[in-house]
Image 1 (cartoon, helix red, strand yellow):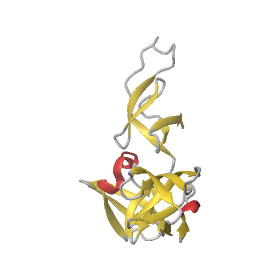
Image 2 (spheres, helix red, strand yellow):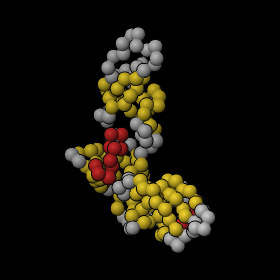
Image 3 (cartoon, one colour):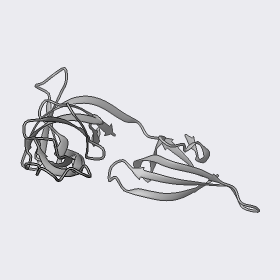
Length: 186
């Protein structure tokens, strides 16, 4: 069991039957009142972020999250197909609801990490930086580079990324999958 004052950032616990991760923790002690733990917590299933205060009488069960590496194979209709790294014939599907916005960075044969809670996949974790080939890039106009500048380019997964003007079709760029921002040319 986790006591209310052990809810440090990164701690994963069960609240109302669902796993939550602590994002921020602040211990508040006011005169003539009981101490309170002010937290910002994220539901690992729905992704909702809540501000919640916990009293000294509350305790929580630690969530058992199982992380495993898998390989993304392909997407078809509203589902994505994955397989185990060591057993390619062991395939399973995940809906776009579970994957969310991360679907735009899934490229075939890429290794990702899945998070399971009670034998149910609740989330996927992509590598922080991934490399993608640019398939569409509008030409940059000479003279528009005095201030730097960006243009929207389309990467191999179909996602649009803001990239510098010198990026051309066929270039391989590195993208931060958490923020969706261009980080460099490879």
